[in-house]
Amino acid sequence: MEQCIVYFSSSPDLSDQQIKTIVEQSRLNNAKSGITGVMLYVRGNIIQVLEGEKEAVEMLYERIQLDSRHAQVTTVLSRPISERLFSAWWMGFETLTDRQLEEITALIDLETKESLADQPTDHILLRTLKVFYESNRYN
Image (tube, rainbow, N blue to C red; front, top):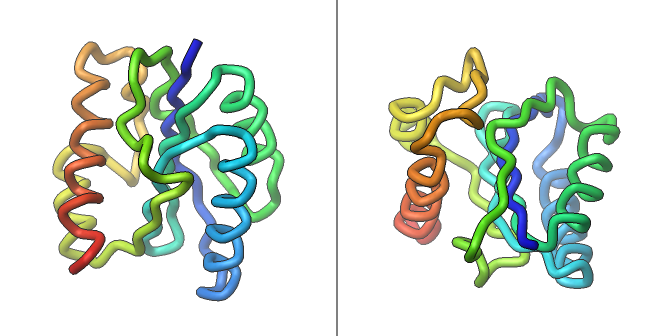
């Protein structure tokens, strides 16, 4: 069974080089584990989508929760999926501008990090993140 986990975390002390290293290493590890997804970074905060076999995704998420580079790890969504929305990327990555952050915060309150897991429209969150990422990654 395939699983999707979306989470927020705070990583305010990461340098650009550390972020680059994390993304490169994650792409290699995700390819080995069959995990796909996207990570958005803004103002020291991370929004990440992980997709793949349930056991692999849950194991990765447990490691992320224990990783000292992440603080305040908050699960936004965790659910089975019938298809991957980010299947083309072992880990898509984008650093968001303030304008892009405003677009996302219109959908998600990043300050309170309230869980959307119980909302029936959670698939809209994933599709919105995908469209947002695809339309902004070359800007």
